[in-house]
Image 1: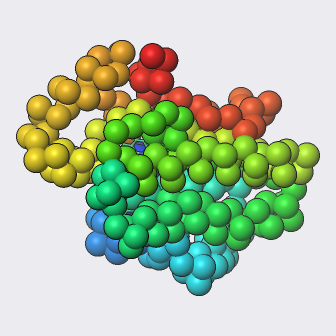
Image 2: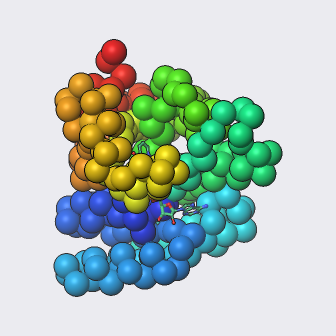
Length: 247
Ligand SMILES: NC(=O)c1ccc[n+]([C@@H]2O[C@H](COP(=O)([O-])OP(=O)(O)OC[C@H]3O[C@@H](n4cnc5c(N)ncnc54)[C@H](O)[C@@H]3O)[C@@H](O)[C@H]2O)c1
């Protein structure tokens, strides 16, 4: 299994969840520092993940990482396209550079990783891709033009991939998390110049369930979608959002 952005937050929790199930996991992350810390932590817990450092928006890095993962494990059964970044702001605030960067990581990154991994899955005649979109890919938000647009694209890319490969034994789904308590959430609080606790309280009120999610709750959904228990599920946008998108 490859988990992009596996050094932190949802990606790290998902890597750990799958490792606990006995999966062979490659963490592919742009941050060598965070990646090494995550791998050290997982090794302390008795796991042995592979760490690959690279940028999912860079085709050369992607080719190298996928080849290294294939060579280490012999096959790639599961791809979790999770790496993503957040850029906040309205159309007036977001710079062209920030727009290009978020589209490169959040949208092109999913495209490039899938482009490299799908031929391997076709050869194996089996595979599962789970993309990490967001509830922000299903509804609009204020002050989030670039992020929500990128996540909306991930939802539709998921459906297109699902249709292209559903008869080749490759299922493709995405998870759409609500607000999850990760470093990205804390980045949002900082950007709003709000104390984390105050921001947590405010966001908890937006989620009908009355709290934020934790990374493991998304990891559990990814595990289900990647498992044979989800054998008739493809092309879905699976909300893990405490009811955020119900209202
Ligand atoms: N936290 C939330 O509330 C939330 C909600 C919905 C969706 N998501 C999505 O979940 C995913 C993970 O978010 P998180 O909250 O765990 O964030 P995070 O910031 O904790 O982790 C993101 C990881 O991705 C890595 N990364 C960033 N750019 C990369 C690149 N170009 N190539 C490879 N790795 C890269 C980072 O180094 C980091 O380790 C993102 O796609 C995010 O948009 C998060």
